[in-house]
Image (cartoon, rainbow, N blue to C red; front, side, top):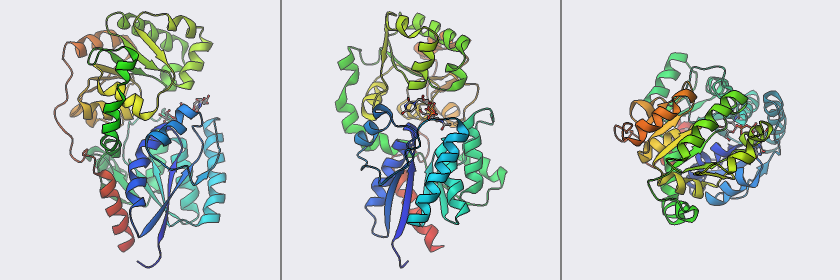
Length: 366
Ligand code: UD1
């Protein structure tokens, strides 16, 4: 291999940052390539973006597209246009996109149309629910990518069934790399102590999916159940900006602050959030990543969604899908010890970034 390869790592929104960080670190130590971080700007608040860069030891983005919020078409279209300009100016050899946010598909589409190779990190996950914007982003990105890095055998099977044209390699779950990379700082942070929460005796809640927070009746029902549960098990609830806006619109924001046992707070950075999750008794969420992190940590997780693109967290992990009406009963089951992980998952071992680097190198050699 003659020329040093220029690699773009595209990061856009909160769940991308912890996937890109271990890979940035691994690639930055290699002499055959030069990684550059491209922040599209989908998430822009300090506590949704800058705090994660700082916590995860990421450098300032080399390029920032400043896309911001908007409808799906606006976000996707603006990202494609801005990124196309950057691609033409910088001619990278490989574009790495991660996860399933709007920027993932937008950057992949802009790149392949210019003949630039694309690798998808966290490829092959499927919820089979096309009402989820992320499912569309996953299916389209995988159809376009030249190199598909998967976290689990179910993802390999999905891609085989779809007959994708790219090369598929199972590398494991890169979120576990971030967790292990940051473990000493996470353990030292002791957020529960600072909040007056007793280790192993509180729950953590996160919610941001449109299906849960954009419908006032669903949001209301979830808040009622959480308020009831918080009287028995203190709940720490860092509130996503979308959810905060919907709670304010529904006139629930002020009263929620006064619910006994409910600790309402601003979104947390990576270290603080993981410190909170690590010592918790139970997680209630609609996030993708938290389903995986709780499985790795062996913490029961109730996922407020009808489906998951991460079925291995149910078959082998401590995750259970849950409708809002079932939440109170399933929380009791979890607290009684009725939800446990079956054991460690293969390749969720903190060494995924290493395997990705090997795979990228082999890709050029092929
Ligand atoms: C996006 C991803 C979702 C991911 C989530 C993690 C898509 C389709 N969705 O959803 O997969 O799980 O990120 O958070 O890409 N906002 C702010 N400040 C910010 C970012 C957003 O105030 O820094 C507010 C804006 O009002 C914005 C709304 O939150 O309109 C939603 O943000 P957006 O990025 O569109 O979607 P998320 O719900 O965050």
